[in-house]
Image 1 (tube, rainbow, N blue to C red):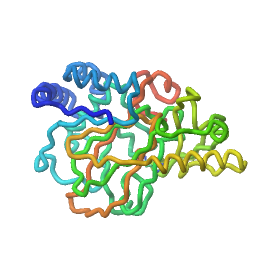
Image 2: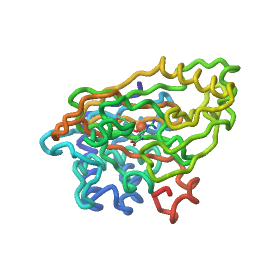
Image 3: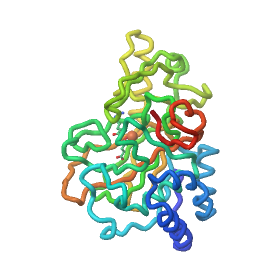
Image 4: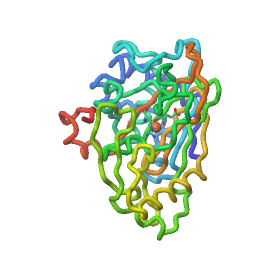
Length: 315
Ligand SMILES: NC(=[NH2+])NCCC[C@H](N)C(=O)O
Ligand SMILES: O=C(O)CCC(=O)C(=O)O
Ligand SMILES: [Fe+2]
């Protein structure tokens, strides 16, 4: 896996950049922060910038890890019990800024109007009432692998996850289309817009759907858009068989990474599907705690779904 471990000097270089951005803007949710994030990110260590630049342009792997940013377990406070957060000073605000700046080296951050109150940076924590739900806030059930927000044409190119706490080493799972050797004949229907994508449970108020292909791009090295859990089961036998074939191949390649505090995982949402293993949550402030952001490479493409040139909310 593509991985970088920041050195002590690199951390010393990154900290003042992160702290200045936080002092100036207060939170990553502030539109002025979002507008300037890339400018601050230009001041991160060059080796980190080169690493993420290569991940974006060369697509060396479907996921990458940026490790070494300090997390003081006492300082970040207890794991929140919910994703709702105070607008003023979110918990671990500094870590949100670091994740947001790294994400800004891959593209621009955005959020969904119909998911979690439109938050740009979300706390991924187990919530007691969601324990049995097929959600990022679930725990007792495996979060089955998926393309993030597969139903949406303007879904993120990348998902960024920063780990603050993961005491039981619960893995984030993933499988890359690059690791699947497809029989062109069996896979052919997947390149046709024969599949219906529905909103997953994290977009409860959206009732729309989209018909599209599962595989696209270079036929010999395709990108993928796949979430069987939130797709209709095709009525036609050929499309159904192709879908099952790809799902089986991805199942066989599914692997995982148990993030450690301070590690940021960037998922190429065009190349890998991802999920999370089941785990037993404690609901006592010591639970697993990740921060999540969505990144698009081209904000302009979604102009019709946003209110204003600088708007980061997708409707
Ligand atoms: N197969 C799925 N799409 N499951 C739901 C995914 C979880 C969703 N991304 C969330 O934020 O909670
Ligand atoms: O918790 C994780 O490691 C991944 C969660 C996830 O995929 C999601 O919330 O959509
Ligand atoms: Fe996800």
